[in-house]
Amino acid sequence: MVLETKKERIIRKETFNALFSDSRSLPELLFETPEEAAGSIAAMMRGFWKYVDDCVEQEVPKNTQTCKKGCSYCCSQPIFMDIFEAVACIHYMEGEDIVTAFEQGFPRWQKNFAPQQPILWKALQEDKWDELGALAKKLNAPCPFLLNNECACYEARPMVCRTWVSKTFRFLCRINSSSVKYTLKCQDEVHDAYNRVLLHIATAFEIPLAAGGWTTLPLAYNSVEGNAAELLKHAIAKHITYSR
Image (cartoon, rainbow, N blue to C red; front, side, top):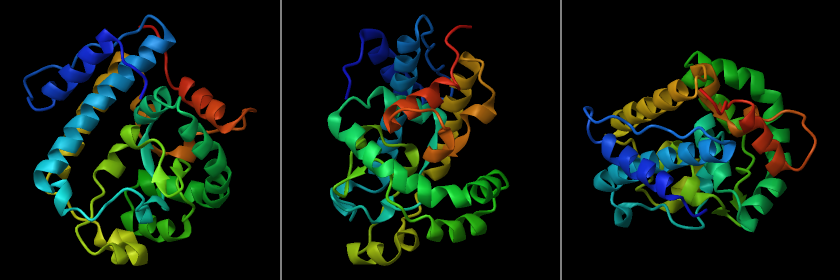
C-alpha cells in the first residue's frame, strides 16, 4: 500500500467511524491537486472497506470461512467495481506485482468480456439478475488482478470481493463458486453504507451518479494507446474533476 498522508489518515478514520453512526457526517474530501483528490477518495474507500471487513468478520469470522490465500475459484467471473473503488485501487497500484498481473491478465479478460459487454450492461441497469447469472457462465476469464492464483490488489479489492464468503468445502467452490456463496445478513447494511459513501463522493466532486455507478473493470477502458495500467488511469481521470 502507498503510504497515506496525515490528511488521508484522518479521512479514512473519520469515514470508518461515521459509517457506524447515521448522525455522524462523512469527512470533507480534498481538491487542490489530482493527486490529493485521488488520495482523499482512496482514503474514504479504505475507511469504507474497513467497515465492510468488520461487518463480515463479526458475522462470519475468518476461522469459519473456507476462503484462503491461493483459493481463486470465485475470481473468474464478472468482477464489479465502482469507479471510485477503481480510483482507490489505482491509487495503490504501484507495486510491481499488481502492474504485472494487470498487464498480463487484461487482454484475456477484455477478449472474453467484449462480446457480452452490451448485454451485460443492459441487464445490470435493469436489475435482470437471472440474465446476469447466465452471462456470468460465459465470462470466465480470470480477473486481471489475479497473479499466480492470488489477488495482486487484495488490500484494495472492491466491496463485491470483500463480501464474497464461503463456509463450505473448498472443492464445491471449484464446481460452482456462486452456488456456495454465503448470504450475509449484513448485506443491506453494507450496501446502505456504500450508497452513502458513493453519494458523498459524487456530490463533493459534482460527478453524475451514472459516472460513479456500478461498472465492471473493462467498461472503464477505451482505445487509448499505452499499457494497461496507463489505460486504466486515463479512464479513471475522465470521470473525475478536481475543483469545485
